[in-house]
Length: 122
Image 1 (cartoon, rainbow, N blue to C red):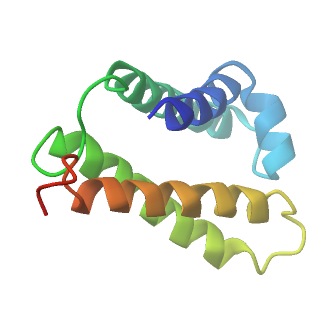
Image 2 (spheres, rainbow, N blue to C red; image 1 turned 30 degrees about the vertical axis):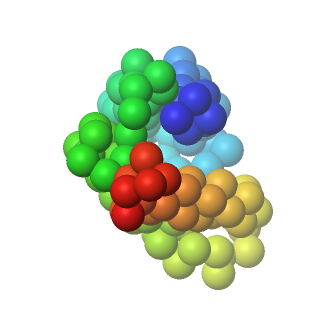
Image 3 (cartoon, rainbow, N blue to C red; image 1 turned 60 degrees about the vertical axis):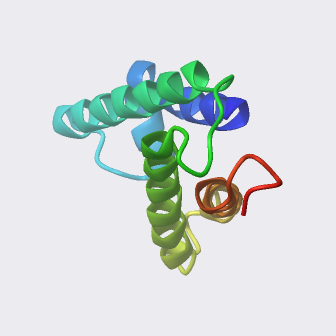
């Protein structure tokens, strides 16, 4: 939970406070509307990071904190699939490592979601 919180917070802070630079790096429109969308997306990423940070000490898995586990699983699976689809674009060299990180988090949250935290209960 802590690693996902830090990862999401970093993206959220960059998108919120450096939307012009982020849009240039990503290769999207640097117009005001594009910057506004990146700032809203940054707020979303940062909010998700805060959710994960606050839940880092809680028991997650099985029936415990299922909405948090499901939200993270959904985010990282959909994000990983979208990023893996975008790998075919050779101009976006940062996509491959990002897709790798998203895939790892998707797998880990899948394990958390489908496995009970108590090893004696299956």
